[in-house]
Length: 230
Image (cartoon, rainbow, N blue to C red):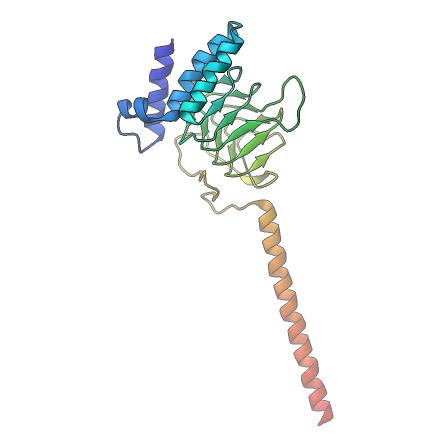
C-alpha cells in the first residue's frame, strides 16, 4: 500500500510540475513528496494510539522538509505540495484528492476551541502561495484560492476567491485539473482582480472624472465673468 501511494504521488508530481525531469529526481529532491510520505507513517502511528511517537515523527519531518503536518490531519491521494517551505496543516484539517498547495499555505484555526477547528478542503483544489484558510470551514471541489488570500468563510464548488478577507471572483474554473490558467502568485490569468480593489479603482476613476468636470465648470464661470466685466 505504501509503495502504491509513493508511486502514485511521484507520477502526479511528474505530470503537474514541468521542472520534474525524472521519477528519481522527484523521489530524492522534492520535499513535498517527503513530507506527505512521512505523514503517512505519522498518521498510522496516531491511528494506533502511539500519539507521542506520531508527534515526534511529524516533528522530524518538519525539521527535514520545512512542512508541518499534524499527524491527525487527513490527506487525500495525489496531493502535491509545490516548493513546500512554510506549509502548515493543522490537527483537524482534511484535504481531498488531487489537491495542489504552494508554499506558505496554512490550514489553521480562526479561534482557539475544541472539536473541529481546521478547514475541510475538497477534491481538485488549488491554494496559492501564502494563502491562509482558517477555521472549521469548507473549501468546495474544484475551488481555487488566490495567493495571500485569507479565507474565513465557506468557498463553494468551482469558485475562485482572492483578497483579504477572501471574496469570490465572478467566474467558473475549468473542471480539468490539467488545464492551465491559475496563477498561484496573485495575478489570475484572465485579468480578474480582487473585487474590493476593483470597486476602489472604479471609485478612483469616478472621482477623477468628477474633479475634471468641476474644473471645467469653474473655468467656464471665470470666462463668463471676464466677458461680463468687459
